[in-house]
Image 1 (cartoon, helix red, strand yellow):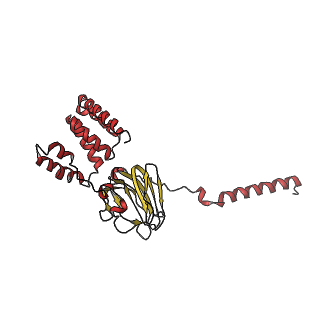
Image 2 (spheres, one colour):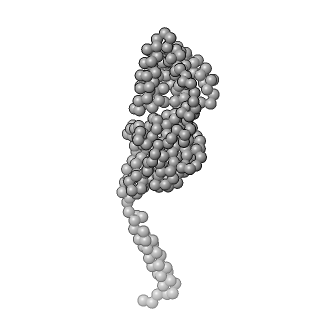
Image 3 (cartoon, one colour):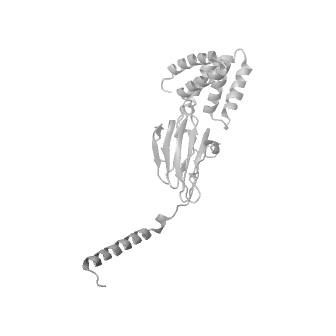
Length: 285
């Protein structure tokens, strides 16, 4: 049977369209395959235990809170590091560099041969690969940063010598000042000298220096206990100490509110008045 030209044209267009659809459907075979399900990996804070920073590489007390290890194909790792006042790293370098993000407090950073710089909350520091440096807290402020770095041949850092007192420039170490009596000596030495000695040498020199709890955590515990026991005189000094150890005013206020339901309204109201006076005397903390 002889086909008309219009019929031949229609047949040609139909065949061409069908071929185009078939080619499009098979050009990326993977696009039409069902993807295998991927489970979400989540680690909770309770799954990542804190650890004390290695004394071989740090001066003073610092706590490391790991976030994640390297997961192939990525070589990146991250952790929060919290330094107590005066604590700092030794001189070291990172083979692939490091980013520091200051999340709380005030600290120092210094590159080898360079000027010591002050860094504070919100600052971001890039440390180029192989640059020798140190960083840590100022003498009167705790300091927390997020550290992000990569592995190279199984390591993230090369460690060198300790930072000298002159390099750190801690006023308490460089200035020659007469030794001042401690608060315990001021309050107790005349009446109960042994109690003053035990307070300084056991309570503060031993208990408060144990690495399993940071000074910030110990301050929160102590302030809570003094609120519960309604000890206003001791509470005043320990709220001051808590602010120096990195506890915020809002955290203290929330602590008082929370304890009102467990220790009684009068104790909480007393604590509010004391906190108000201490906050007024520490407007910048």
